[in-house]
Amino acid sequence: MTDIADEDFLLFIDSSLSTIFQGHLNTTDFEMATVSALDLEDVEYPVDMVFDPVEGKVYWTDRSTKTVSRSRLDGSEHQIVAARNVEDPSGIDLDVLRRQVYWVDEDTKTINVINMDLTQQKVIINGGLDEPRALAVNPLSG
Image (cartoon, rainbow, N blue to C red; front, side, top):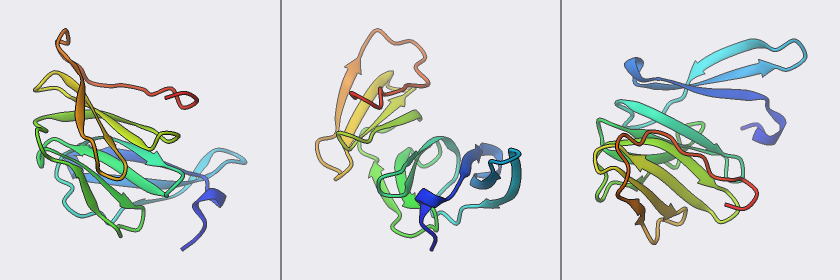
């Protein structure tokens, strides 16, 4: 396995193919060198994903399985991060400094958080949202 810090790559989702892809970039001329599907378990309808450069893991939300999951890029260390009280997960982001995972649930109209060690799952915004879809966490201060 190569050191991910030395790689230039792009991750993207094709929900209709139930796949998260990795494209290796040539940043000299910004051409896509190769594209390959990640060998991930239990991906049925991925909606959003984010990469954790600290641990080298991709996190994604899946509408069909009603889960937030994570795995290494090679498919190893697959884990369900959250399934309890998850109905329709969509947008996801990470606070890499505080080691937290945030996601939006469109059905419950909530914004949720769980620690990356899988403790302390909670709703942090409940109410006042109509069709929440995406979120972004300030990478410098959470």
